[in-house]
Image (cartoon, rainbow, N blue to C red; front, side, top):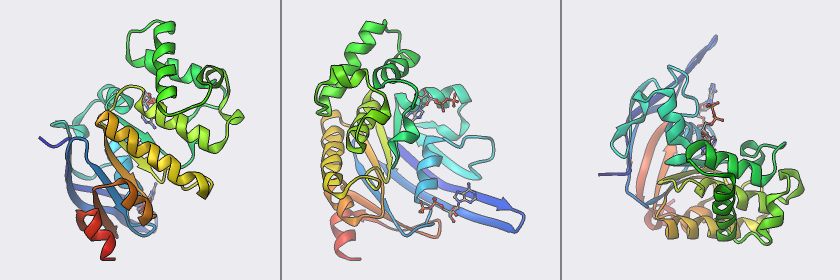
Length: 245
Ligand code: ADP
Ligand code: ADP
């Protein structure tokens, strides 16, 4: 069974001036532990694909048609509670700006412990130990000190490392990363991508990497999908897609 199986996924937006089909019936599969890149020009539907998978915009009617099977379960038919359990626990999302995901008024430690305890029966101390192990795994120096810091006290690169640790906190099966390094200094972009690759490999986590950067796709993914105007126009081994632009 595929980890993820998307069938005829359709998303439309309408406003006073008319309707726009953001996703025009896309279908694709992801195997367990597979790393897939989604590329395409601005407006092609890359981010909406990520959002639809996370069901982040899961107000009724966001998905206009199709099916998303995750480990054989139809995400589009889940209750709000099931979606909430699935997010974080089985799928996690990493955005361009870590401040979107980090809570500015909580320390790194508070938010990690809170996330763990929201999903698992753990004492504060048990959750703290798991969080510190995750911070060490992503090579955060002095994790005990970082634990007490607020997001704004850390550099952009350090924040994105922490975001990766947080994405891995509940041992998800799939990480969806939407332009995870675009906001970072170019000198550390490759380091963060290398870390993401290493973490996915060592934890057997599938990855959907949304980016406009073909270099990053070659570095990290095995397969690449090219989107254009809400459709998938190419889907194949990264090596053949990137060498044949
Ligand atoms: P990409 O990530 O490839 O740049 P998106 O997935 O963000 O593209 O957007 C796909 C299309 O859907 C674009 O035409 C965009 O303008 C439109 N779109 C995205 N979000 C909304 C929204 N909330 N309301 C209306 N249109 C939207
Ligand atoms: P609600 O939908 O109830 O307002 P949230 O949207 O804040 O709650 O989060 C619901 C669940 O999704 C939480 O358990 C949280 O850990 C998880 N979650 C939120 N954002 C992300 C993300 N970027 N990646 C993974 N899990 C997330």
